[in-house]
Structures are given as C-alpha cells and as structure tokens.
Length: 518
Ligand code: ADP
Ligand code: ZN
Image (cartoon, rainbow, N blue to C red; front, side):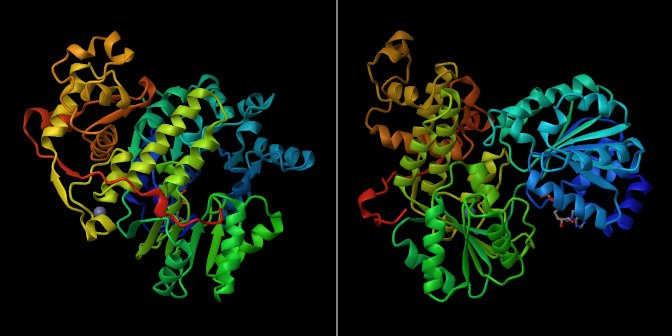
C-alpha cells in the first residue's frame, strides 16, 4: 500500500487525488531505498516519481538535469506549489549560489536541481556530504549512454554518484531509450540491481501518416484545411526552412511563426508564449522547440523532413495530443533527406557515426514500412502490440501483402547457422550466394542456406529484413557490430511454421520528388 503520507503530499502540494499506476510503484520502490530506472513517455508524469519521495523523506533530493533552460521553470512551479526548491547552474551569480547553498545546509530546501557540470565541479560532492541527501534523481538519463540518441560525454561521470553515495537511492528517468540504451544506463550508473519500470509508450490517440515529400506545401495547406484553427508544429531540418515556411504560411493567411536556436532568446520566448496562449496557430521549428513545453492541446505535428532516428520522431510527435484527444502526425519522407542526414553524421568518432547510421536506417524503414506503423514504433521500444492499431495510414489502407514465410525461414535459418554473428549486409551476401572475402573467410559458403535467396535482388532482401526487424522477428545488436539476433518470435517462424506477411518491395522513385527549397 502506498504510504498515507505520499497520498497526503500528492493532494496538498500538487492538488491531485490519485497517483498514476506506475508512479505509485516507482514511489514505493524509491521509498524502500531501491534504485530504479523509469521509462515513461513525455507527459507521463515522471517528475512526481522523485518529487513526492523527496517530500516524504527527511533530507534533500538532488535532481540532475541537462536542461538548464527548464530548471528555472521547474523550480518556479515547485515554489508556486509551496515546495522549497532551488537550482544551481552556470546561469547563477556566485552570490546567489552561495545563498542557496546556505539554505541547503540549513535544511530549508527539499529539491535541489543541478546541471551535471555543477554536480561534478570540484568540491560539490563534499558539499553534498554535509547535507542529508535522501535521493538522487537523474533526468534525461539516456544522455549517459553512447547507445542513446543524445549522448553527452559529461553524463558518463555520473557513475561517481553511486561510488560516493552508496547508501542513497538513485532514480534514473527517461522518455526515450531502446533496449540496449536501457541496459547501458544501468551499467553506466553502476546500478546492476535497479528495478526497471517501463510504462506503455502507446499513444493510441495519435494518428500516424507518412507521405512522400512531394508538393509538400500544397499537402500542408490541404492538411490545414482539415485542421482549422488547431494549434500544431511543423518540424524542419534547417533553420532557414522554418523561416521560409512560416513566411509562406503567413502569406496564405495563417498565424505562423518560426522557432530555432539561432533566434535571439527574446524572439524565442515570444514565439513560445504566443503558441502557448494560442495567439499563433503554427510554429515552424527545428528540434530546438518543444523541450519542456507543456501545451496539452497541440492537435497535430508535421515533419517536413525525416527525423534522424525513431527516438526523436517519437518524442516530437509525442508533443501532440497530450490531452488524450485525437491528434495527427504527418511525416514527409524522401530519400534525399536520408542522404542529407548521412552527410551530417560524417563528423564525430566512427563508432558514433555507425550508430547514427544504424538508427537512421531504422527511421527510414519505418517511413518505408507498409505494415502498422504503431506496431513498428512500439516494437522499437520493446513493446509488442498484438493487434494492428487501426489509426495509421497503413492500417486504414493496407497495402497488398504476400506470404513471406519461406523467405523469413531462409533468412532466419541462415542467421542461426552463422551463430547470430552476421550483420545485415553479410547475411544478404550469404543468402544471395556472393563469393566475397567476408563470406569465404568464414566458410559461410558451406552453410545449407548459402545462395538460398539468390533469386531476389539485394535491395529486396534489405527491405524484407527490415520488415522482419520492424515486426520483431529479428533483432539487431548494435553492440556486436550490428549482428542480427533471433528471439522467441523468430523461433516460432522457424520451428512452429508461424506465417509471415510481407509487402512487396517498391523503391521510392527519387525523381518524382519535388525540387524544394531546403
Ligand atoms: P514528464 O516529466 O514525464 O514529461 P510531468 O512530470 O511533467 O511529465 O507530468 C506531465 C503532466 O501530468 C503535468 O502537467 C503533471 O502535473 C501531470 N500529472 C502528473 N502526475 C499526475 C497525477 N498523478 N494526476 C494528475 N496529473 C498528473
Ligand atoms: Zn496501425
């Protein structure tokens, strides 16, 4: 049972009558002194998972967050609720910092927000040891993993928290982490026995559509016709296109504005404010927009360009329909965006580049997919949806499928025969009976399925293998050179003759694409 104290605090400080189911379990675990990892989509209510325990226990809770821009808002919201809170980061004067530190020492603060830089600065751990820290909360915990999509090297130093404070529980929170990233977060933070909570990432009220990036502006105007007066966001890849698009929309009589990190802070907060107050209908933005924006009635999100991975896409569309009412998510897909993103990845260390490319591949396959898109998204986060969703373009207009069971069996048995050690391109080489060095060196030309798929071109195999990944019949281990792995569902196909449906591969014709201003 939830402690009565926690219930009272929920009501008194936050004004809510009941915890959401997962909040309840997390809070119980934290109060029992156990470490945990919490995966909850944006808007799921992660903050209460540490704010309530902080108030139940004596002492102070330290919240590590990389989002300096949001700390102030979070702290102000807490203060407004009567929770003594403060934040320490580089934006504060030395005097203000000193004052706050004294309040902490006088036991007057319950929640202290700090940037990772501040936490790791010299002397800060000694300062914390003079307090009674009751809990560490690590927000945006995916930043600690090189397998995540927003790796921040300074986050890796957070491993010292557990070393320095072995008795203090840690709650790590994130809205976005695939299977591997989750494991890595726990490893990096040194929390091998943490309890992991994954709330469903399903947002059934989001209606998902992908269209080829042809005549985008016209398509957007039609889309807006059917979303009259409804607030929405258009995500663009470049700052320039946010401005151009906002201009063109204003030219059509829409209240639109641009938002990107290159604008002066004042212009940015003005744009944000106008959107929050429904004074503009449309924000044309780069990914800089949306973090921490608590606007529940965003009715649609358009991606003018392809996002660089599924985590980003999911977070961005997740800003729509937070009130639970229907919201539309429209993605424009073009192969040229894929090329453009690949070009942008070139810098950075080779490992990070290949990871980014692998994640982009999955994004591309999502865009090209012909099966239920929600199933694919959820599968990516490790959740299996039993039925098709009925609320995506592919569910509404299902493309023709054929029985791909035999193809799946060929591919999966080849994976098994090569001890689950090969990546996709080597697997295709083996299936197609290629005689290159990689194949010959390992004697893969001797396995039974060698050449069993030579009647299909490379591209087709690629599409089908991606369909297997999307359907959760195969998995990809980034950490092992992107080797393909079998799971229980693959075994059902191999040994129980479970049927597999495939959609015939049709290349997206690049030449049909509109030549657009970027
Ligand atoms: P996250 O950090 O997961 O994105 P927040 O902690 O900001 O989510 O919570 C999202 C919204 O849900 C906030 O407006 C919050 O006040 C509200 N909320 C959280 N928990 C509850 C609850 N138990 N009952 C009602 N509203 C809640
Ligand atoms: Zn669907």
